[in-house]
Image (tube, rainbow, N blue to C red; front, side, top):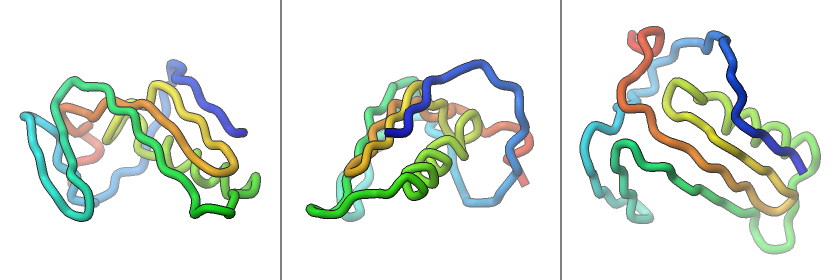
Length: 103
């Protein structure tokens, strides 16, 4: 199991142009699943592997790095757990992009 709990950190993230737009008002959109976004809310996100498949230690580490990559830029991660067959994390979406994120 790979775990992460939010700690104070002062590190720089690389800027990137992914087209991320911060959540500024309540939104509902739909692709394959409905997506609800509301500023200031904490989101509980989980995903799982296909039945019968598990992530190895290296794959779990990659998943945790992916969750933490956008921490403090696109979202604030409060806690995250990556287990062999599923991942769970709690986050708050950023209201405004950080200066270095803007192109």
